[in-house]
Length: 331
Ligand code: UT7
Picture 1 (cartoon, helix red, strand yellow):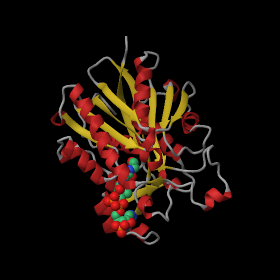
Picture 2: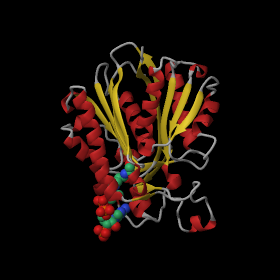
Picture 3: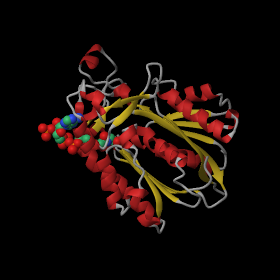
Picture 4: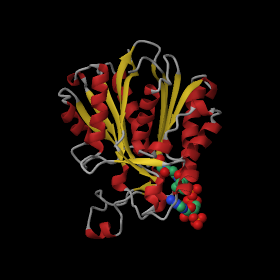
């Protein structure tokens, strides 16, 4: 017997500080018009000095506990999708576990960049399917401002900080994660990466001087691959479940560029109301985009029981995939 996993609660956290395009214009050779027209971004959030990825994850997790009324001790697993952990180790998931008092949970981080949340969700759904777990906390979030090079205008304008979380539980109803498909193509690794700081090039004065501890991206190549990857994964899921774009209540794509979102939605035959877009306010929060979007959709009452929801992501690795969900009761 396998058990289907369903999302029973969703929450998110955005740092208070808003960085507008106008503010960036003061220090970066860019302008509001270029950023808006090329990316759809108007502003992004930035953590306070004493905040990091764990703080955003903890805040989201605490909201889930408050909404559901469950005790932290009932959580059995915590997975944090992130590429900007507070530290290399211990994991950010372990920091969350301690902070919320989830004394019976084992916890680990999962590194799949912008696909970090859907890869984590897939991992958690597999654990639920085993029948051994009843309550798993899945968090996706990143502090991208910690790895941005503010001398590189092609990347520093794109990203922001934020996190979201969901509670995953087994269901015996029709709701839950119906199907999913995940991919990795490591040959795309050098198109979007952080060259130093790991075991290959540990931090030295030289690596710092050469600005190698910042995100590097081949924007055009990532753009093309992102549209192709998210559309291909989505089409496979829709067709093998006998669905078309018309059947979707909501599509929550990774928020990297409004033009990537629009191109993907167009190829899937979706209209504007079917697509969640928050990039203008939040920018690209890497593993945070999908759980933040999901939590906002729940708060706005955009999802009703029985609705079909499709999540799709693409990111460094390359990693990409999609998750098809029939919506249930979610707080
Ligand atoms: O989630 C995974 C991560 N994925 C992504 O972040 C998305 C991938 N890529 C993209 O979103 C887009 O490729 C970018 C937004 C990064 C770039 O947009 P583009 O339309 O591909 O622009 P481009 O790289 O072709 O650059 C066009 C021009 C260049 O000037 P020249 O060479 O034509 O004179 C750039 O130097 O725009 C210039 N430019 C800028 N100008 C003002 C690049 N960045 C900026 C900037 N402000 N911030």
